[in-house]
Image (cartoon, rainbow, N blue to C red):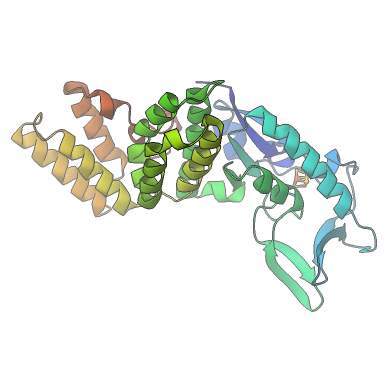
Length: 316
Ligand code: SF4
C-alpha cells in the first residue's frame, strides 16, 4: 500500500464544506475506499479565486460568442476572467506535482467534466465543461479525469483507477531521467494492457518505440505518455480481453498438460460468453504461472493492473 499516488480532487467531493450553501458533496467511495491508496490534493477553485462560503450560485451562460461564468440571480456580476486566471495559475502549479488522476464534481460550472448546463436565450443545453476542469484537461491532456458520480459505475471506476496506476508506474519507471532503455522496458510490460484497451494504439506505440532513436528522450517521453494515456481511456472490452487471454494461453502451450489446457480453454470461453468474470481466467493463468514461471508474462501489468484488495475486477 502506498500513499504517494497523488490524485487531485474537487474539495467538496472529499467532504469539505466549501459549496455555495456551506455544504459538501462527499463521495463515500472516495473517502472510504480510495483514501488508503491515494494522497488526495483538494482544490476548490471558487474558494481559491476568492469567493466566500456561503456564496451566491453561479452558472455558465453563452451569448453565441463566448461562454461566461455569472451569478445566477444577477448575471451582470461576472467571474469569468478571475476564474480563468486562477485556473491557469493553479493548474500550472499542479502540473509540477506528478498528479496521477483527478476526481471532479459533476455538473458544476467550475468543476464539471462534461454535460454542464450552459444557459442561452431560449433555454439551456448540457454541452458545457466547468472552466477549471477545462483548463486542467487542456494543460494536462494525459491526466485521467473522472466525475464523482461516474465512479459508481464498476466499468468506469475500474478503468479510471487502472489509468491512475498506469501513470504512477510510468513516472516511477522513468525516475528523474527517462532513457530509451527504460521506455522500451516499460512498453514491454504494458503490451498486453495496450492490446486489451486499444489494439490500434498498441500498434502505433509499438512503431513509435521501434523508432525511439529518431527522438530526443524528452520529446519521446511526452509523445509516449500522451499516446499511452489516450490508449487506456478506451475500456478493455470483453472481446479484446479474450484475445489477450488467448494470446497468454499460447505461452503455456508446451508447459500445460492436456487437462490443464482444456480447463484454461473452458474458463476463457466462459469469460468470452459472459458466464464468468475476468478474474476467473486471470486467476487460473496466475496459478499456472506460479507452477510454470515465465519472466515476460509475470511482468505483464495486464495480470495485476491495481492492488487485488481493491476488488475492481470482480464485476467485469
Ligand atoms: S464543485 Fe468545485 S468549485 Fe464547487 S464547491 Fe466543489 S470544489 Fe468548489
